[in-house]
Length: 258
Image (cartoon, rainbow, N blue to C red):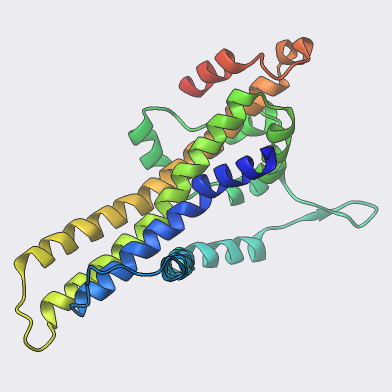
C-alpha cells in the first residue's frame, strides 16, 4: 500500500502535468475546427484521451527542447573538439575540473538573468570545486539524495517540479497559440474571425515563452541549491551529528546567502 501511495504521489508530481498540457493542445485543436461538443462519453474513452494527452505533452516538451537547443548543442560539440585533455601514465583521460564544470553550467546570459531575478550571486567556479567539492553535478545530485536530509531533498524536488512545469506547459501554451492564430487568420469557411482568439493567442504565447525562460531560471536555482547543499553536507558540523535532520536551518540559510 505504501508503494502504491508513493507511485501515485510521483504520478501527480511528474506525470499529471503532461496530461494537463496535452489536454490544452487537444482542446485548442478541436476549437480551431469548431468541434467542441458537450456530451457524455464512456469512461474508457476519457482514459484513452488522457493517454493521448500524455503523449502530446511529452512530444511537445521534447520537440521544443530539440528545436530550441541547436546553438547550445553546437557550442557543446565545439567545446568538446577544442577542449584539450591530458593523459596520465595509465592512459586515463583527465579533464580539467574547471572546464568540466563550465560545460555543465548554463550560458552566462541565463546566469546573469538569474542573478537579476533572484537577487543572489551565482557561485564562482572556484567555490564549486573547492568548497562544494563538486567535479560534476550528476554525481553531486546522487550524493545529496544519499547523504542529504529530508528538507534538502524535498527542496530539490520542489525546484525540479517547477522546472518540469515550465518545460511542459511552456511548449503546450505556444502550440495552443499557433492553433488560435491559425483559426483567426485562416478561419474555416462559414466561421467568422473572433478578436478574442488573437488576444488569447498573444497571452498564450507570452505565457509559454515566460515559462520556458522560468524553467531555465529554475535550472540555475537547482544547480545553486546543489552547491549550497554540498557545502553543508561537507561541513564538519553535519558529519558530527551523524543524522539526516541536522542541516535543515543551516542549508536554508545557505540558500539565501551566496
